[in-house]
Length: 184
Image (cartoon, rainbow, N blue to C red; front, top):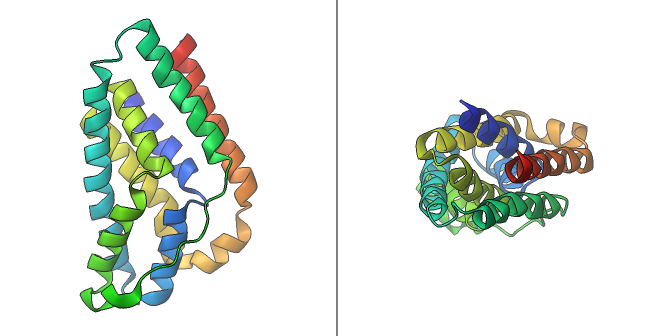
């Protein structure tokens, strides 16, 4: 249960103000079918984060030593520092719009997550907890918690949520997970 709750909480916080949350806002403005967008986010996240949790679980076998555990904990702290840096908007190619909201959302979300903070976090969570299923479910739920409200009420929410404060809270959460992993 710890792997599920930690994964959900940290990814939901890390996702606030992330480029994929901005992508949700753009997709919601472009397509009317909000449920298709959410389905695309869900499909892309399950696939991307499932592979990431698996990779983390696989890497964990090489990190069983004290040094390996220090590397995992330190990586969470480095990720915390990375979270303090805001993401930049990226241009989105409109040529795929003919595929529909579900497929456009799935494809764009999958590729937007590659190398993203939440994907790296999922690899680390997979290595820390060695639970592919619970980490994947938790990080996917965290992604949905952060992105579904944006799909339905994006403009309003983006004006109300102070992104700098959200980034600091997310960074603190990741730093605490890292410190707990090192010293706990």
